[in-house]
Image (cartoon, rainbow, N blue to C red; front, side, top):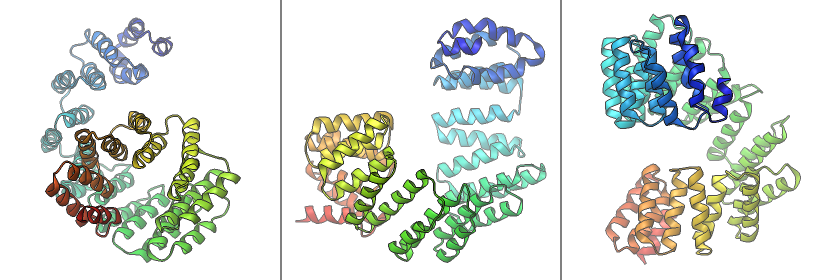
Length: 453
């Protein structure tokens, strides 16, 4: 009955049923831990908070009741209420890892440093709280405090071993991934090999991780050897595609395409993925006609998934087949109405060609409504405002995009708008800084040469 009431939007009507569930002392604590998961389907997050607060009122001395308030408050973006409830939880049930994890997450939304300080303080009192330590390491990596993160890795493994953790291969893999994200590729490889020795179940996934670590160290032959260890099954196609990309970079595109052609027993979905990969390799090598021909053949002979049609449209655009591109992108959007990349591609194409600017803006804004804060889409919105002469708005969106990703094309666009605003020194500095990160980038070199003359 409770689930039916939630599904039909009658949240307040659930209270007597939930109160009855919580009345039993033996299941009360677990009931409060379960309650937010039960209510999660309701979109009324403030309503959930008020309901949980009402249910918890009868149990002021129960830590789980305060914790449930904190969970629902966090879900409703009421961070202060969440923190107050967590402070009460801590008094009622000190040293509770689950509550400490949530408090760190809530604090992170206010200040990453506050979350770091809290986790460090908690660990100074409870050094064996390994779940907290793992979260601390993740947060340090997120904040690019890599040296501090690396100091936590051996401690995570030590406490997992001391506690005879059954999931120590999984924990070792997590440490390997954190080392990889920290740029310690040799260390990551070592952790992944330890995880294999400890009996990690998904060994093919570890082979891929080790291969990727080898790639980062320019140990290309070793990487290929590790990819080749992956057996036919769930990870096989991923390994083959990664290997093909490596072969294309270090040997030749043709060898990479041959490698992908040799894969047997592919489903239709997998065939499409392989063709998309091959077409992307050809496009990257500036072999645009071959890329288009491959996709043209695919859309005529295989199921037209929105993603395949999207790639076909972009291949058409590279050959200036704009009418075909537009019709195919509209087809992809009709098939998949939440396909943000397709809205963005069509809008950006209009903006770049300085046509249909009002529709271009509408398409790009639609894309951003589906994928907020996407740097490519913010760049597109900035570019359409530039085309419409709204230079200040253009700078606003392009700067937002560049904060998310220091992509060279965004740098080129932002620099061009700054130049047109008369901020020549800022534009030149931006382009040259971007060139240091992306040496030889054609888009940046073209824009610099354009304004140099």
